[in-house]
Length: 282
Length: 100
Image 1 (tube, chains in turn red, yellow):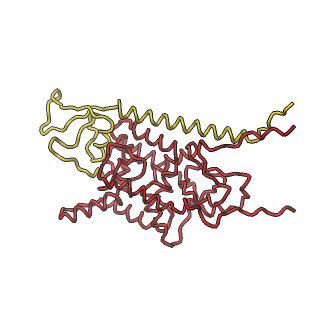
Image 2 (image 1 turned 120 degrees about the vertical axis):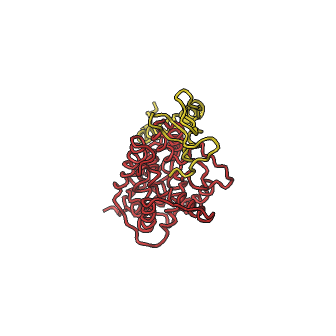
Image 3 (image 1 turned 90 degrees about the horizontal axis):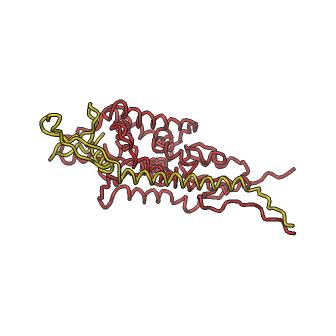
């Protein structure tokens, strides 16, 4: 009887993967606009509210929703998402998004985490179709379910800072709506008990970039010759996927935790692929 | 005579090539849309005036898409009941800043 092959799991992630939080922090520094450039006529590619006092670019979801309310086609926002998604796909979520970074930091608190079935992530497409496109288009930006009015990123990055700023300046500090406060509190609690609750359940931008996981120039690939079906990668995946067969899944945030297994590799469209076997010697 | 090579890896090679072509198409299409949006696309925007003007006296400006993006980030645009884009603030006024 053949001996069962041993799983090839590295004892710890590569230095690059271990440095993910630092890379996210570096991106955060860029998004927070340290040079006060306020380039709000440029559409960004991450979930960072443009109402934030420190925001370099315009939020792509906010642009899509507001243009939908204006009945104008957002060519720049769609083009930006196509370019970024075509190159890196879901890597934006795992490595560059400031809102994902916040959730990753809170997830470090050692509290038992709820693991929901991965299909719940498809709810993001309902949010994208409903709150980002349909509600603004048919009811305008004043509707209470307009995405910016229920967005926890807006509450965390813009609502609270603006509230503090107004209060510090001795202003009225009218504050956020009850709905937004409720969402903020629920979201704050959810961050402790679920890994990336917003990204994995509701994020419309993650829904868009997730689609590109199948087509992007930088992607993950499982090498079937090295995979021994041990299931270790499933335990490592924070979004509850089965990486050995779901590497192009729209729910993958490309955190690369699964690359601890030697069977899963990062590839680019320019990586050398397997070619024909050499001709046998005469 | 030399045998033709066995092409056991062809399927994967095709997958890699397809990935390259699809990614290139997406990036090229996206770049084309961005260029169109920046260089060509613009919309007419009604300026807010202190007194409701006669229809023929409406002041309008042509705003490029980057300018429209900047306007929406400060809650500076809305679609009026007639379906036209209009500014939410008048000359010398500041927009609401927080659109939410």
